[in-house]
Image 1 (spheres, helix red, strand yellow):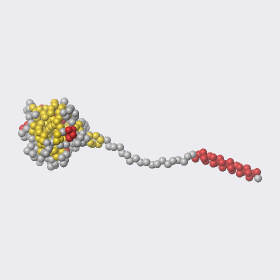
Image 2 (tube, one colour):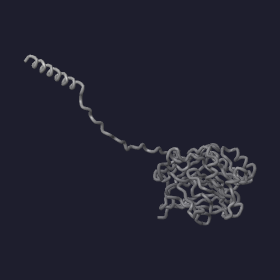
Image 3 (tube, helix red, strand yellow):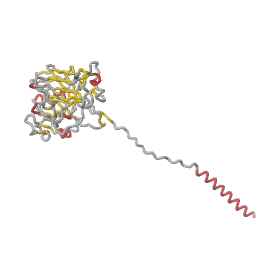
Image 4 (spheres, one colour):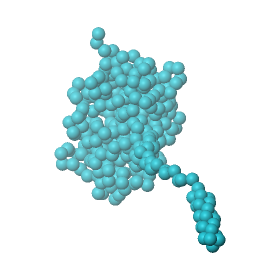
Length: 344
């Protein structure tokens, strides 16, 4: 009897110890962690293209610009690549004709041209852009001036352009030298991209001229008797459309009419002390900026060849262009500029 009780007592003690031990080791039940996969993507870094003001992804458009001295003789039209330019300067040359210094960076065309010879004002135009200048040659003294500028000189007839400049059979010399622009730019990809040249608004509606300017339907320019181009506002495309002297539609080889988001007119002094017309771009003067079907009066200044052109309104505030391409019309003081309002 005693032995049975002892065995039972031992069993109770052992069972109690097991229960006590089990309670101590188990602790609280674990709480399951919910699985979560984030769908958040950080916004893409955005900057603006330096020569057009259009928004682009950061780290793109890092190529250098290519400028070219583009022929505007009737025998050279329609030109190649003008419809994709960022900026075009129109300047007076001999015989009352004009030529262009056209600049590409946002979109480099496969080919551009026809290119012609350099003039003494061209170093002052292109030095603030850096990059490449393409042309067909010129007087030795003017070529030396351009070679002294901070740009790479790509000149027709030189060893380094033997494979990138050629004469097209579709036009007659000297109006037929074309440039394989995209190849030239790739050859000089070590050159830096240009710096931003002008101030830009977010869109056309917030640009200075569209906000503060006078409604404008047509801009008529007179460089000389042989050059009287016209820009007409086209509300449908929100662009200025270009017409050549005599009212002919000005087109590129694609058949597309040349157009501009911004038309900037600079009144300039032109002298002929070097035997050819030279636009004086280092200095200051009167100007107008036309954007979004309106025009605002401006003052322009440029301190040195490498300085950018500064545009301010009559209150001294920096003028902001609309994102897009810009044509800069350097009209001599002997010429004329007129702005026609919309018809009632």
